[in-house]
Length: 173
Image (cartoon, rainbow, N blue to C red):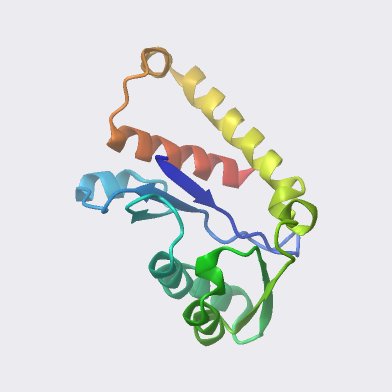
């Protein structure tokens, strides 16, 4: 796994989406030039296996989700619906949602997220389509992009930068 994309979707269709989180595999020892090349509306974090562990979740809550939530709703409490990811069920994560974002977290039934979770009920497919369209547009922008894509020779740095821009383009739609 090179990276995972984490999306948080509000129930209000006209409310701005929180910035997408691209969780990349590795330690995050990237040069400043690379980090400055990422799309400015995509949060990039690193975890050794590119999955959401407790430490990564706690950082996301404090530094990414809470400021987004405070900017829109200030002190108004909210309810977060979550699947049963182990990191989200940890008492320190539940408390961090309360402390930093005035959010109560509710968990749906195990093994049934395909029935109740919005990301599994259409949003995920829509995001895959948007990412595909963003990739097609990027490839068609120039012969250099077409050749690069057809050749398949991207460094990890180039892949991370490209993915952030594809996700950024998809989130504009």
